[in-house]
Image (tube, rainbow, N blue to C red; front, side, top):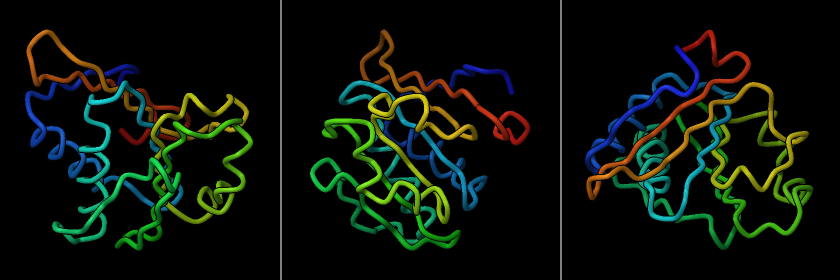
Length: 152
């Protein structure tokens, strides 16, 4: 896999399908960073991925915008879903269970740019969500770091 590989999604269902496919590769200790403006598909992706890993297609998956973190029991172990948009300082993630999440589960992070580089795990997959020229079309770029370079 080459850094900054592009996947083009023409619908929310294609974004969800991509998330379900990626869920098959995940294992405890994996970290996914989801970056992009509001309305780019991060929540669609996160919900589909969490539902797939929970083996519960109708699971209620609220956005952690206000709680900052949600946890789920999945078939591959605990999954921690962070939304860092509202944290005031990067170190605030420690109060949310950051170290526990990295040690025991799969970690999904929206707005990872709120972290400083020292807190970003070396082994992570970054997914960038952006809009394309056509309405409803999204570009998803994925950039592997550390062990992800060999896995994809």
